[in-house]
Amino acid sequence: MTRGSVFSGTLLEEQALDVQELASACAVAPEWVIERVQSGLLSVASSSGGEMRFVSTQLIRARRMATTERSFDANQELAALVTDLIEEVERLRRQLQR
Image (cartoon, rainbow, N blue to C red; front, side):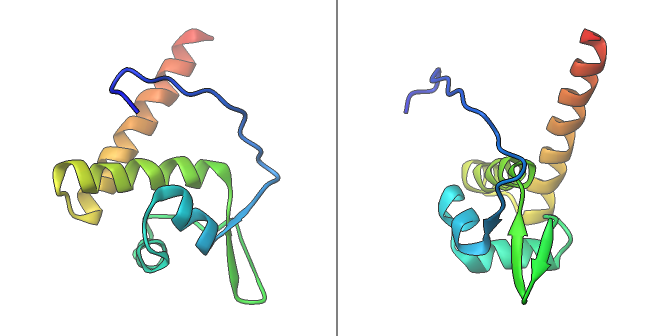
């Protein structure tokens, strides 16, 4: 993947990932996901039978956090703050486009 690569796809809100699938999609260990959930940095969409499920918005958030942590050697709180700011900028851009 080059720096200028662009990917497109469709997010499926009704598709929920479990911890293992989310971890795999983010190239992290399942423990990484669990730590961020316990810290309140990732939200669980549903929890049935003790199994956590995550929607696509959390997949995007987790990927951003993992990338920030790896790229900048950032701790999990800083990575979450950076992700919050990116999400806010995106929200404001959508609002401006309306």
